[in-house]
Image (cartoon, rainbow, N blue to C red; front, side):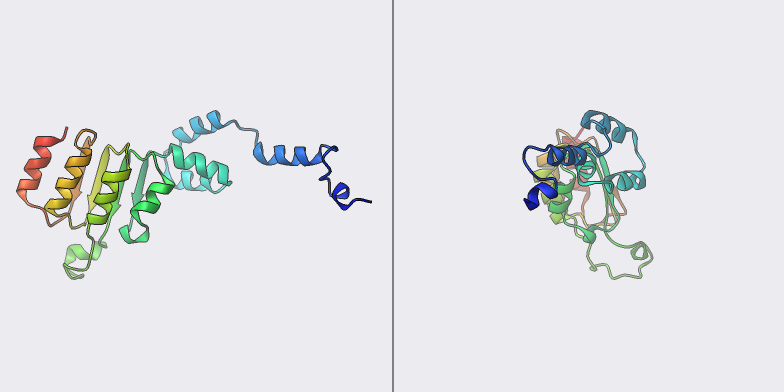
Length: 177
């Protein structure tokens, strides 16, 4: 006998097609409905759980997620974040640990916003809201951000950030919405 026929992979018996259909329609939920449901789920923990169901749901989550919080800027790269969530509209990015607020970490420990600002300016085409927390944001970073995103940026929050001057704030006020 043919081993392929015993496993259900013979071209004429239809079992292979049923198995393939079973994988693509595992829960019988169309992509449109899944996208609508995921749009209503706002809790990031719930969205993370949904994206673990299967690769397809992970892709739908990645395309429909509008806000991400990166609790530690060194835990990922800007490029990797863009590849995972290409349609982000809102990003909250934290760099230095909370201990830095109490002078328990040296001022030059890290937390530079430069690599993030460069990637955000070049790649994140739908970004409207940016919240940077405990980061070093230089005047050049602000200028790059204004050149690239002034027409779209609705909100920029620099929470406990350092490194920029009042002239950068004036540039933001002059050029952004």
